[in-house]
Length: 110
Image 1: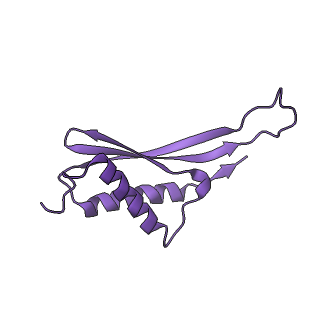
Image 2: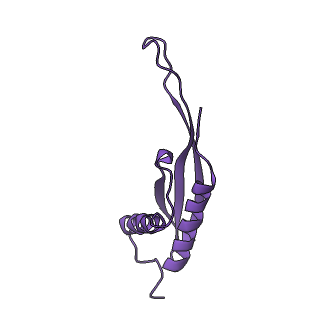
Image 3: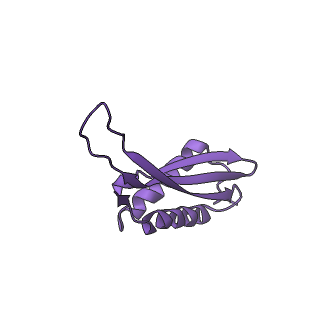
């Protein structure tokens, strides 16, 4: 199949993901505080893709540098796998689904 993703390298796949994300953000935004990160891993005849983001942060007031605690960041993630024989359209749909999961979760700051 001409449109399958079997010929994509890891770098090309990461660039494809970022392109889909940039296209998505033309119509909707992803909260920058979430710091969405994509992790791509090659496995037998498939790609494992993980979207990881900050879902909340616990802030501690800065009063005394000797005893103050660092802010604590809480992460969430979303995994999916796609076979290398599947189409770029299917990959795009999976990426959009992952972004929608990220956007459906509100960022919390305590």
